[in-house]
Length: 185
Length: 185
DNA sequence: CATCGACATGTCAGTGCTGACATGTCGAAG
DNA sequence: CTTCGACATGTCAGCACTGACATGTCGATG
Image 1: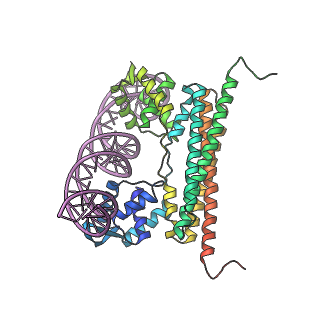
Image 2: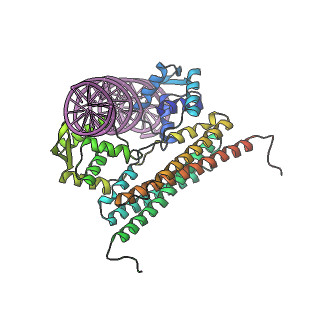
Image 3: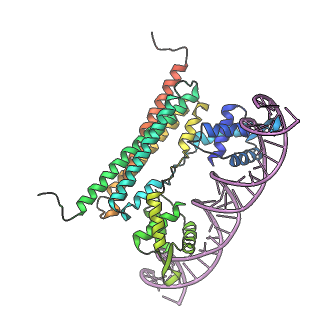
C-alpha cells in the first residue's frame, strides 16, 4: 500500500498539486524507486479523497483538481514514514535463477553470472551519469536524492562483485567434481 | 510470471513431485527468494498442465497427483533461465521513505536510518546462522544455495554500511544549514 | 475405535498493479 | 482557422498474489 503514502508524501512536499503534476514527479524523480501508472494514481487520489486524507483545494481549467493533504493525511503519512517497518522486497528473480543453475552446464551458468555482472556494471555507469548531472542541484531534496543514488551505486557494485565471485565458485565446484583431475598430491 | 518457472524448475530438479511436495520446498528453501502460497501453486499447476508444460505422471492416495515436466516444459524453463533477462525489482520501500525524510526533523531521519542499519545487521546475523547449519550439506544444491546466501550476506552488509553513511550525511547537511555555526575560518 | 496431525486438493473474494481505451480542453504555431 | 502537443481526468479487463474457506484421507497414537 505504498503508492498511497508516496502520493501523500509528494503532496506534503509540494503543498498542493494535481494528479497530472504528481504523475510528472513519479515519472521523473520516483521512477527508479516507486513507479506508478496514471490509472493507478488517479484511482488512488479518489480513494484518498474518500478517506479524507487529502482534499480538493482548487479546481482549474481542463478539469484540473488541485489536492492537498488534510491533517489526518499528514498524520497517516508520518505514521507510515517513521513507525511502520519498511517491507523488504523478498522476491528476487536473479537468485531464483541461481537456485536452478545446477540444471545447466557450468559454462552456461558462468555465462549467466557474468551477464549479471555486466548488467550491474552498466547500471553503475548510468547512475554515475545521473550523479554528474545532480551536483548542481540545491536544497534538501538534493541531499535525499543523493542518498538514494548512493544506495544504487553501492547496490550495483555489490551485485557486480558478487556475480563475479559466484562465477568463480562454479568453476571451483566443477574442477573438484571431476575425479579424473584431482589436485596433485 | 516467475512462479511458473520456479515450479517448472523444481519439477526438473526433483524428477516428479506433487503440489504438496513443491509447496514444502517453496516454504523451506525458496521462501527468501520466491515465496508462494498454496492457492497460487495449485492454480499454477493447473495452468501448466493445460499448457502441456507439465503432465500428471501418477495418482496416489488422498487424491495425490505427481507431476513431471514435459519436453516442452523443459525447453520453456531453459529459455527462461538463460535467455530472458531477469527483471530487476524496482520498488524499494526504504528508498521511498528516504526520499521523504526531509519532511521530518533530522533527529527522526537519523533514527530511521540507524534503525535500517540495525535491521540489516540482524539479517546478517540470521544468515550467518543459516550458513553455519549449511556447511555439512553436500551436492550441487549446496553450491547454489551457498551462492544465494552469499548474496544475502553481501546485501545486508551493504545496507548496513549505506544506512550509517546516510545518517552521517543528514547530520552534515544539517550543520551546514545552520548559519549560526559555520566552520571556523 | 476415536482422534489428531500430516497429507492432499481445490475455490473464492479482494488488492495492487499494468496497459489500453476513452474523452475532452487550452494555447501556440503554422 | 486549423491543427497539434501538452494538459487533464477518468474507466476497464486482466494478471499475480494473498489470505481465508472448504473438503477429504491416511496412519499412528492413545
